[in-house]
Length: 402
Image (cartoon, rainbow, N blue to C red; front, top):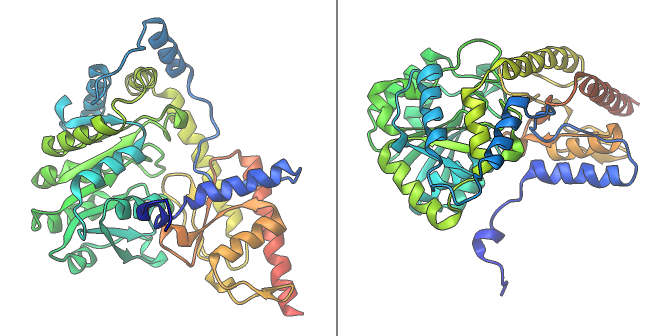
C-alpha cells in the first residue's frame, strides 16, 4: 500500500513545469535551449509597483493581513472592475488569494460535490482538469475546432448541460489559443445560463489586458446572470508580477464567503507586501502596462508570420494572451531514424532534441492534435526558435521522402 494518498497519485503533474524543468536540465549540461514552454512575461515589474512594495516594507506591512485581503487592495479591485468592466462589486464580494490558480482551487473546493460536472471548452489551461479532479468533480469537455477559433457556441453549451452540471469554466483571452469571446458570443452564452439558475460560470480573465483587438468583454456584465458569475483575475500577466502571487475573485457574496472560510483554514491571507504592490498596480499609471502589451502585439505579429512558413503547422492568429497553438496532426506518421512520431508529445520531444526548443504538447490542454508555444520571450529569441523548428521539420519531411 502506498503511503501517498490516492488523490495525489491520481493527479497529473504540470506539463508546462515538467517541460521547463527538462529544458533547464539540458541547459545545465551546456546545451543551448530556447524555452517556449512557460507563460511568463520576460519583463521586469514596473518601477512604480516595486516602489509600492518597498513602501509597504517601510510602513511595516509585516503582520498577518486580513484573510480576504487589505481593504485598500479590495477597494482598488472594485474600482478597477467598475472602471474597466462596467461591473459593480462591493468589497465583501472580493477575495484576494495567492495567485489566480489559488483562486480557482478555492472555488472548486468550495462549490463542487463528488460527481458534479464542470463543463470546460477545449483547449483549456492545463491545471483546470487537475483542480476539478482534486475537488471530486468530473470534467465534461466540449471539443472545439480551429475552424471556429476554438470557441463554443450557445447551442453547444445548451446541448451539453445535464442535471449534474454545476459549473461552466472558460478563459478569455484563452490560454492556450489566444482567442477571445466577443460581446455577442458572451451574450448568447449568458442567455443559456439564464435558463439554468443552478449553474455557476467561472470566467478566467487573467489575460484580460493582453488583448490586441479592443475592449475586453466579461460575461459578468450581463446583469441577468451576475449572481451566477465569478470573475477570476490577478496581476501576474498584465503587470509582470508572476512572483508576487496575487489573484482575486469577484463573486456573489455567499461564494466569496465560502472561499474565504476555506482560505482561512488553508493559507490565510496573501503576502502583505505583494498586496500593497498589487494595489499600486491597479491604481497607478498604466503606461508601462500598455507598453508591454504593445510589445506583445509586435511579438505576436512576428511569430505568427514566421510560424505560417513551417510545414504542417496550421495556425490561427491569436487575439490575446501570448501563445501560438498550431494544429500539427498532419505530421503524425512521419519517422525519424525509423521511429514513428504518433502524437503531439512525441513531436514536442523531437523538436526539443533536434531544434533545441522547448514546447508543450496540446494533449495537456485537452487538444491532442496541437502544441503550444509561448512568445512571452524576446522577439529575437522567438525568431531564432521558429527558425530552428522550421529547419527541424524540414529535415523530418525530407527524411520521409527519401
